[in-house]
Structure formats: structure tokens, C-alpha cells
Length: 416
Ligand SMILES: *Cc1c(COP(=O)(O)O)cnc(C)c1O
Image (cartoon, rainbow, N blue to C red; front, side, top):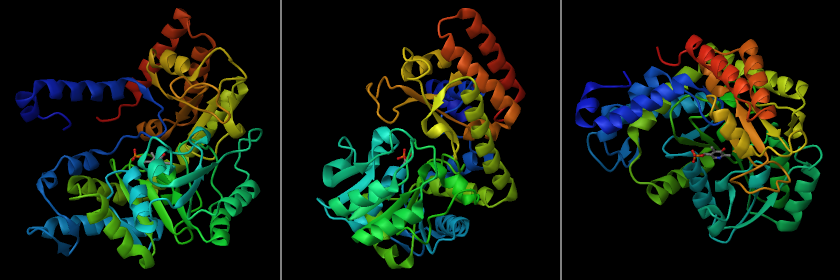
């Protein structure tokens, strides 16, 4: 269903690029922590005629006629999001996680207000106030980090920092911090300095939806999420909060920072949320974490250092500096790519190399778990990754690993 003969006839160049991408996904092991594979049902919803419809506004309050059916879709997405997370209010229109964060900032802050968030090189996200991003340009930002020895956030230091800086908003959440956030502690720290708490759960949306991780909804003032990482609802963003802030958030998204919602993506969210409300999804999320712990154990046995010594989540962050000081994150990423294993280079706490080079790799399990991989396959992959890191230029090792990759891909197709 991914290929259609209309596309093939109208635009063979795009058609073949899509077919090639599909084949690349099937033929390689995707361990990028922020990627996943949506169901055929979500793909159908996203590739539907809903892309034709303008629906500025919200259900039952639109600026265009003919919205009765997209109203049904958006209301389903909203109701399911509220049910999944136990939220009073959900806005399902943000085009991405970054736009969800923008919505919260625009709703609650004025330019020049202060944000306290996790440093990018310690696992934070561009949209948390990095200087190359709008968030770093519009607001005054200071950042907290992890303890360099333990790799964990030191909440007492964070509390002192908050008292000194007096922020208007504190952001919790990360792209590359392998441990759970103590959301309740950050609620207290934020309350003590009169700041809002925004919990950005982009990476762990699915783990929280499945009840595996602490749910900040109801305690943090705002929760933003992505819908395509550990939950399989297609690309997009989501904002959850209480009725108190509903109107401000709605206005900040539309008309504040977006025009018409992407109704085909909202439909993808509705379908993905329905799937996430099942017992099967809970089992999936549990397996995602078990698989990440298996990778962590395998890496540790083979002598690799992990940031924080392990993981609570769906990925591990390998710090190559101790075990392989001459292998950079980008060396490892390239060597692994050449045998069909896709990971991303990643900065590590105390990073000394540039973000293009880095000293670490982030290795995630959501996509492979969707394919059906369990512990024994993860052990095999873990050993294969270490073999490549230990012998990045050995052709025999590369050939062996590439064969293993081919066998695993064939045994676990993504789309039948
Ligand atoms: C992935 C991510 C986002 C959202 O990213 P988009 O690419 O804009 O959807 C937001 N915050 C964090 C912490 C993330 O890791």
C-alpha cells in the first residue's frame, strides 16, 4: 500500500525514492532512539484526503465550512489523548514537538522572560533555549546539567540554580538523558521560585502512556509530547494541561503560531492513540525498555562506558572516551552504517569534541521492538555493535556483521 501506481506514473523520481527508503528501512537495523515504524492503519490515515481540508480553529468552532468530518477526527484524537494521559485538556494540532514547546512559551511567556532547562550537550533539546533556536533568541536562558561523575541530574544543585536565576519557566525532559526525570521534585523547585513547570516528554511519550514511567500530567503545569518516537502515531506534537490554561494554549497554537492544522496528521494521531490504549501497546513499551536494558548489559559486559551506567528508558548513551579514545561518535556512526546498523552520534556530558564529531553514540530500541525483536536478538546486535567499534577497519568483521544484519532483517519484516 505504500507504493501506488498513480504516484509511479505521475512522478517516477519521487516514487522510486520512496520505494528505496522503504527498502532501506527493511534492510537495515534502525536504532535511532527517536524513530519508529507506524502501522499500516496510521499510514493510511496520514495519506488520506484529509490533507485537502482547511480547518483553522477547533472542533465546532472553525473558520471554514465543511468541517464536520474533520471535527470528528480531531475530537477523537483529543479524547484519546486525554484518556491515555489522564489529562483535562489536550491540543493535538502542533505540527511537531518543537511547535508544541513554542505554543507553551508563546502562551505563558513574554520575550525576555527566563527559562531554565537542561543543557543540550547533557541531553537537552534545541527548543529548550539553544542560541541557534527561536527559544534561545527570544528568552533569557540558563541551563542545568548532570553531575559529571554520576551522569545523573543533581536536584539540589538545580534548586540552588533556580533560586539564584529566578526563572519564569523550568523545562524538564530531554533527548539524551537515559534516566527518568524526578518530575515531582521539579514541580516543587518551580513552585518555590514561582515558575511554571513544562515537562517535555517527547522521547518517553509511549513509556508514560503505557504506565511504565511517572506521568507528569496533572502535576507539571504543561506537558508537551511528540507523537512519533516511543508512541507510533505519526509525526507531530501534543500539548496537555489543565482547563485553567486551555484557552491560552489554544490561542498560542492557532492563530498564534500556526495556521490550518494538518488534519491528515491529526488523523494519524487519533489512530496511533487508539492503538496505544491497548494491552498490546503496554507489552510493546515494556519490551522496548527490556531491550534497552539488554543492550546496556551487553555493552557493559564488553567494556563500554554508559552515561549514568545504564538506562531507565528506550536507549543507551555510550561514552566512547574511556574504552576507545580514538574512536569518535561519528567514526562509530559511519562504521556501523556501512554494515547496515543505523545509530546516531551524540554529545556526552563534558563533551570536548564538536557536535558534528562527538564522543558518544545513542542507541535506541523502539523501532526494532516494533519489528518484533526481543532480548536474544538485542544481545546479538549489542555484540555486533561492539565488534564494529573494536575493529572499525576490519573487513572480515564487517562482512560477518553485515551477514547477521541481513538475516535479522529478513526474519523480521516491518511491512508485510
Ligand atoms: C524530539 C524532541 C522534541 C520534538 O522534536 P520535533 O522534531 O520538533 O518533533 C522536543 N523535545 C525533545 C526533548 C525531543 O527530544
